[in-house]
Image (cartoon, rainbow, N blue to C red; front, side):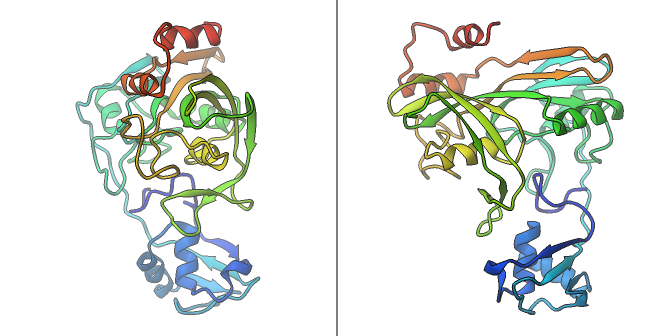
Length: 329
């Protein structure tokens, strides 16, 4: 099911219990629940009014104030399920068989329907072009095992049946799916490579953003410099985990936000970009039925090439040829 706010990897389950920390002392219950569960304040208030919240086991009111150490139990309000419909939308299918499909998603396409994006999504296109998708993700997310942001381009794998979905989910959980991105980031790194190991959670001040939070979910990004252009750097970023906005948050934490990212970087995009210069260029996984190791590539899209030229990349070697040589292809 999908609520009218997309959780993007955050809480989506039944009743949960959270402990109020020192920074929540004195906070109203409705404000705490809205922030903690990615809801609007009115949604949280409706749930509390229905008796779906308790403090230390006692049914509570929206206006009740929290103390440090209080245990809050909360059941989010019922959600409305969206059902995707097939739409004849162009789709770049890199690979397809009876179990999986690998898609090269263009920048600007949302992965699945949600509030504000009821159609025109990748799922709508999948329903038109493919026969059969796994049902584990529900009516709004058939076949979807993992996601990439609307303004990020590149590869993702889709499950065409539940066997494939379960296998791919386990591979993602075990960190054996290799997802390699390229990104143009602002500034010039002093180091040539590194790892960011910093947990990520939804921002406590803006529920539409993610933030580094030691009490969040583990997030690890390995990066290395591919080329330097002075004011910008081309990097490779390999995901060990797959949290919402992970590369964008981690790069911004290093002082090198992804170029064009107006959420975690400068409010005015550079290089003529209309979204972050982040491309899922390579994907490697184990086939869910045969066990065969498989690797896929997505060519560098036009918007990214144009941004590279504006960043100062010399034109004597094509970026695709450069990457193929770099990755031994």
